[in-house]
Length: 209
Ligand code: URA
Image (cartoon, rainbow, N blue to C red; front, side, top):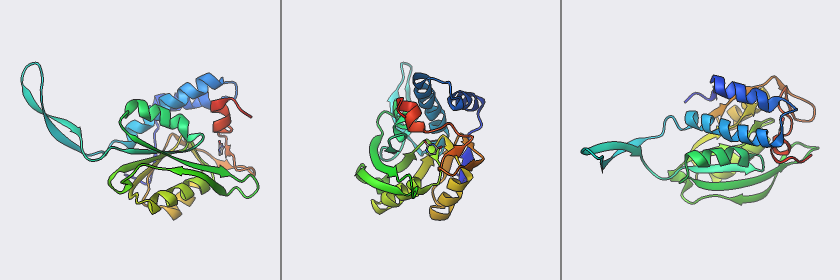
């Protein structure tokens, strides 16, 4: 997989535009995030390995394709990651799930860890890390550092929007982790927000300020 994949599918782009609009309601924002996450997950899981399993259709036996290996691990970077997580879990209900709690110190913009709980045997799983906004890249890099310390080797990072600064930071720190996103925006502003962006993803999902 390329280091960065922008999913330019028309449905993704259309839904993203509605999400960017500041007048879109909390309920619609949440629903759209869930829908887009499934479309992004389609791209993220494209290279999963298949094996065959003997089944019986109403007509005959057949060797049919089925996913090989251990269950996927989905890792949500709290709290906004949960919006993407909910959608993927509908698509891959048997996935194992982990959470990394990092908040951004608003002065230094550096991540501070407050929670970490991930599935076992990460080394044998495909690990999909989700966070809607790849802004400075500090949280994503810190989360992936922790996951690698826990044994993860096969990682993909999935987000909704990325800033060029965040993509660069990830490329430098974790060149082995592909990024799948719906768009790469123009820049980060002085508060670390993506421009044009969509504002604070967590606040827009949960109706907080
Ligand atoms: N986090 C957000 O929620 N929005 C941004 O624009 C940047 C980081």
